[in-house]
View (cartoon, rainbow, N blue to C red):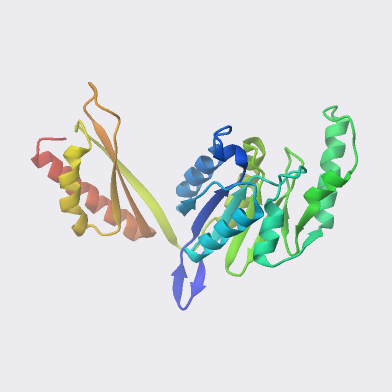
Length: 273
């Protein structure tokens, strides 16, 4: 969560690291980052970086260090928690945060229970623990184990100084309910600094028509991003403009309102409403 540092509020800065070669080859689409980014925005939290990473501990470690250097206070890794040799996320995280991998009793009990439940439900032929299944219970020392009620691999929250690292499975059907149960509640109410969006629609046929207006208004509304959403060129002559701002909740709403009014007035003067 956001905290206090030298008397100032530290805003939450989130980096998303979807992990897996399948993302880099285009075989699998990264829907996890879209889901997480949208939900974090609803919570008023800002995602500052999204970077797909290969199944390579060096690459994962490099991106984690870059995220922290760029000011991330939360790093969310998705993917690479399973039993196969290419599932290397927790090994990489352990190396980066300087904590040894240990077999966590809580995680081991979770894995054993999930395989037993799947066997009893007739979804799995062989119950019990194998060497590959035990691998999913190897977590960096000091990890908070996050339960997984859909799949078998538990998630993890690992402290890294002032950075909180969350590791969740890559399968969306597992990741999404785990995020709802563990991740979002852990970051709710973080620090008093929020991100908000205000959207307006205008009868403008293309974004180049807005460029000069936005450029003229921007200096009077620092910290407010005015971002058109182009829809191509066609019979529907309208365009949405998203205004986004970060700050204290009440101040953000007022700044967005003033910017929207100024944009509406400027476009009305040009005959666009």
